[in-house]
Amino acid sequence: MKKSLFIFALLMNFQTDVLSDENNYLFKQEKILPANEVFVISTKNENNKIYVEWRIRENYYLYFDSIKIQNKKEPIRYKILESSVYETEDEYFGKTKIYKDYLKIVFNDNYDESDHAIFYQGCAEQGFCYPIQKYIL
Image 1 (cartoon, rainbow, N blue to C red):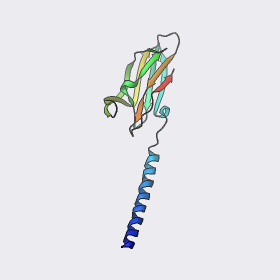
Image 2: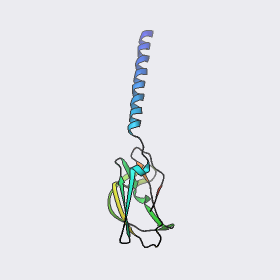
Image 3: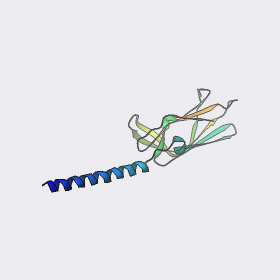
Image 4: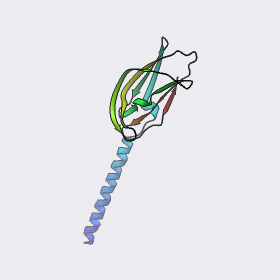
């Protein structure tokens, strides 16, 4: 009986070690990247219009309602030119729209001084959400 318990304990220890290594492997594979590597922004100013593009890495998304543009703290309206919009069930916000893969917007640049700030927030599909990001033009 003692021999059986000893073998059982060894097997359980081995299984725990294997599972532990497996979890460490999965954790390393699911590394959370910095926001600027996940939501890559590029801008172009053309004919008094500013075009903003986000390239959104696979398995990440931006919240539809999180995109805000300001000039000296005054809100600026923008138009969506291209996007991949999806609906998801969010733990905190309930049913909400998100952008995946790509987003392109445009807004008028009717200001003498270029003091634009773009705010956005997104998450990894693994459950990690980034704080609100600020991009200055």
